[in-house]
Each structure stands twice: as structure tokens, then as C-alpha cells.
Image (tube, rainbow, N blue to C red; front, side, top):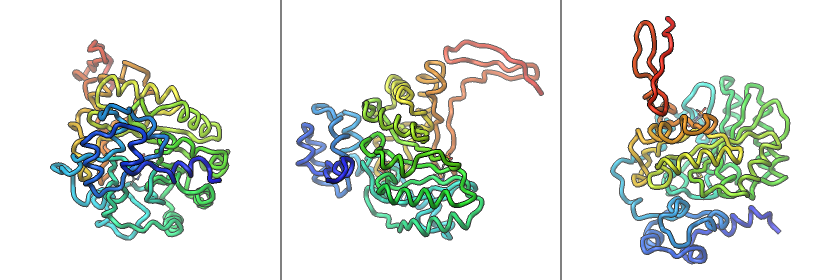
Length: 357
Ligand SMILES: *Cc1c(COP(=O)(O)O)cnc(C)c1O
Ligand code: SF4
């Protein structure tokens, strides 16, 4: 008998026939599934969270292809190659993406527990136009030879799809490298397949070690949060793994004040610390998910800062080829002179503080 999470992967909902067991598929969804040559699908668990009748359901929109994916006014061709500087400096294995001096993204797998329609790695993971070779031992050797790398972010695809044994090997090898101080894993599985957080996984990657493991997951809408995810997060924390969130700002899904606030409050309620909200990157074929750039900053101003605890406040960033650029609201400083700053709070009230030279 395979483990429950493996069964969920085997039974991934990725055909029209399977999807029809869960929802009343709309004409638009049906056309896109039949027409577009694109990899799509999610675990039966995640699909069961869909609204049967509403095609605007935030989970349906993240999972089911749309004819809108054919429009590409703003997306960049070869986006990922540009973003990960793959043409400019090519002395690295395919598995290593680098933008910073002290840390890298280490790609270990190309499959996911959900093929997000808004994925910025779409060309690699969803459309599979970009061919890269991810070899774990080659990546490990590269990290070993680069003493300036103190922080390794394991990503993919979704790294938690690796078996417990492979993860244990990968984490153990990284922990043997003297200059690696922090290991991070980017994974959507705590949200789209919480069954993956098993005793075996906790043994493989958890425990009290000198080199900690941090997980950042991706949850974009409060509807994605269930008691199963809450339990999975608790299990991770209880074996010493911190859990953060990296949401993507998505038009019509989480770009209104109420949803945005509720998402971040609910994340905290289940012990996930909001880390980033990403602007939806200019990858090709995802125009329909993109808001104006300022939108995320406005939402932090109007939905989070002052309206709820600062613990729930993520940093809003635009991920680029030269790193992540914070785009935070700039309403706080009204005026500044030699003597003092004039400051504004979330309600529009004004206060002053001395300007120290
Ligand atoms: C996002 C990213 C990182 C990690 O950035 P943090 O701001 O430290 O979370 C590292 N390397 C690459 C290539 C990245 O895209
Ligand atoms: S889980 Fe991550 S890598 Fe996979 S499709 Fe979604 S956004 Fe892309």
C-alpha cells in the first residue's frame, strides 16, 4: 500500500473526466482543457476544496486552464532564462539559480503537487518549453566549492515530492558543508497536499540540528486553509521547522482588501508567518492574473498595516533578475525638515517626531 500522499499524487485530477467528478465544469474551462496543450492538475484533496458551481472560485482559477493563457501582451518570452541570469553567467549547473552573493536557489525536481496557472516558472514546469537538467549531486558539489554560500533555498518544482530518503540524503549532505548555515525549502505541499507531512518526513528533515530548515509555502486565498493544513504546519513546527508563506498577488483571487486581510490573519491563526507577497511576474501567458504594480502596496496600506497585527504583515516584492525589490506603501512620511518628521498613520492621523541628525 502506498502512503496516502503518494496515492494523492497517483490519482492527481488532471483530466476533464476526473474533474467532472468534483465540479460542474463551465464551457470556458472545458474549451481550455480540450484546446490548450499544457500540463495541469492538482491533488484530489485540493480539487475537493473547489466550489462545485462557481467558475470564479479562487481554487478553480488556480488549477484549471483558461483560454486567457493565450493572450500575452505583457509577458516576456524566455522569462525564466532572463530572470535567473542563465545566459549571462553560465558557469553554474542548471540546478543552481543565483542572484545574490550569499544564497542561491537549488532546483531539485520539475514536478509539482499542483500546476499553478499563475506559475512564474511556467515555461519550465507547466509548459515544459524550457529544458533544464537538475542533478542533485552536481548542485551539491557546486555549493561545496562556493564558500560564500551560507543559505540554500531548495526549490523546483516542488522539493517535497522527493521521497523521504532522497530528502534525508539532500539535507544531510547540505548539513555536512561547513559554510551552509541555513537550509530553506519552498513547497506548496503543506497547502495543496498536507498529507505529505508524515512522521517519515519529519524524521528525514526535522530535529534539533545546528543547521535549521525553514519552509516557505504558498497560500494565496483563505479558502485554501483547512484543519488538515493547520495540523501539517503544527507537525512541522513541532519538529523544529519554521513555516512562512509566500503568496502571489492574483487579480480576481486575492486583490481585494477583505480577502487580503483574511488571508494573512488566517495564516497566522494556523501558525504560518507571512513572509512575502509577490507581484505576479511577467512570465508569458499569465497577463490575466496581473494587477497594477502598486496594488500590493495599496493592499498592505489598506488591509494590513494598523488594521491587524504587524505579525501578519508580509513584505511586498517584485522578483527580478537582480533580486527582489520591495514595493512598500510610502504614505508614512508626510514631511521632513531640519527639526522634525511629520508622520501619518493608517487612519490618516498625523504625528511628529524629532529629526536626529
Ligand atoms: C528568492 C530568491 C532567493 C531568496 O531570497 P530571500 O529574499 O533571501 O528570501 C535566493 N536566490 C534566488 C535566485 C531567488 O530567486
Ligand atoms: S507549485 Fe510553485 S513551481 Fe509548481 S506550479 Fe505552483 S508556483 Fe509553479
